[in-house]
Length: 64
Image 1 (cartoon, rainbow, N blue to C red):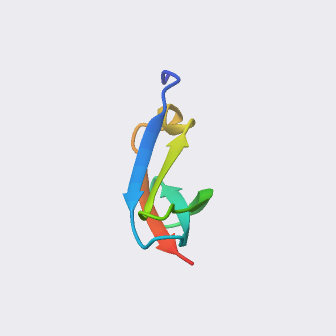
Image 2 (tube, rainbow, N blue to C red):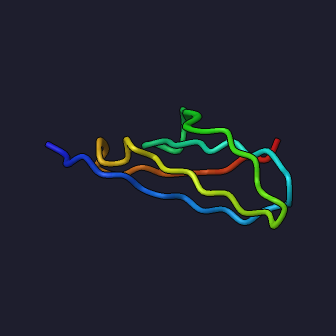
């Protein structure tokens, strides 16, 4: 039984760039959890509200 918890992911990348945030529990079968645009400074924040549903969760960011 897992507690309902979240994780906040922060990225500093290229300014005004689109990034896809993905999650996996196995390093295969990546699932998109968000699509975000960075601001003029290259910053963006995404919250994963489902993080607490998994004993471990891995994240990656893919530029578009």
